[in-house]
Image 1 (cartoon, helix red, strand yellow):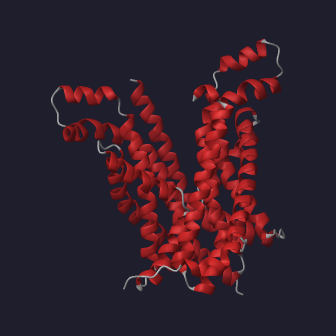
Image 2: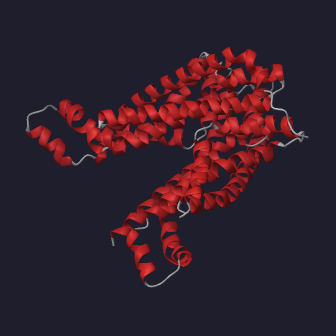
Image 3: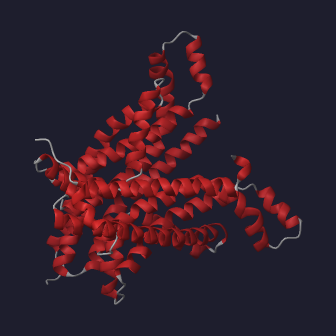
Length: 221
Length: 218
């Protein structure tokens, strides 16, 4: 009963697989960038914000970290139209992933900012820097260095997490996969190839992030 | 289309047991794999470390959804046997839990200071006894908080089983939302069910972590 692998059955669909992966990478990149923006803003609110703002941010973070990304995706894509807000599938997908990623990023950036000793910002203030300048030039860089590994692993998790968006009909790599599967009935080969493509993308992202880390913070490594 | 009824609530609440069953089964099988991974990755034998490392990299570098579809749709094509949704999901989640918990536990073993190993070796304990009586008990204390924290991830991951048709919490929500078109309240309710399970666990992990730091300060 030796199974004959027939990867050549997938050959005519190579273009679709590559296109699907390109879409996946674009969605992942958008979600990561948006998620990081949410993370920075949320962390600043948690540290410097007023009490109601801090409370709202806490609720956001706890809700998005303690419910499945898939349910959040369904809530945003299928639930919001009940309120009259209908989003296109790719938009809903990216917003949903960004909110999920952002909730974790808030915690990453918050712990980064808190890890910088008070003396540094006091020294900055003593030198006559404004609060904003202290934040950007004195606090942010060491904070980023301290949390870079967590930041990097969160990015990898977000890249892997994009696999969900095919479930609301976004044309990503899994969407291409189920189309090819329905044409060729080569499910095993199809999903093996998809897993392999993700694996390569993840390793590539890790290499790029390692390079960025060495460039930005050369002394440490 | 019909309106939401009390029967829908029971369907959703009843489906929680499948979510819990999936998470617990994956936790048990995953723990066995994780133990093997943690031991292999801290082994003296290079080949064991390499094999365990490859396993972890493969699992952590591929989407869980891909592994689940590979098992559920792919393996029947490969072997000619049908795998039911629960089995496929359990295998996929266990493989994943094995890699993630294995890494957490490896980190805990490595966090036990070299001095402990050396002291134990000095009093003449064999490697197995050093592990059994000196290193692992200390590692277990370190591992507790992140293990509980991973449990939250595991429970959230079980929602993927909905995509192979297992009627757990998320799938029950899809079914009710599909027939009532009340997507917003239904998925809010489903999200709250997950939250009610995950949030206490997250708090527990946090307080365990806090207690660890206090214990270490003394």
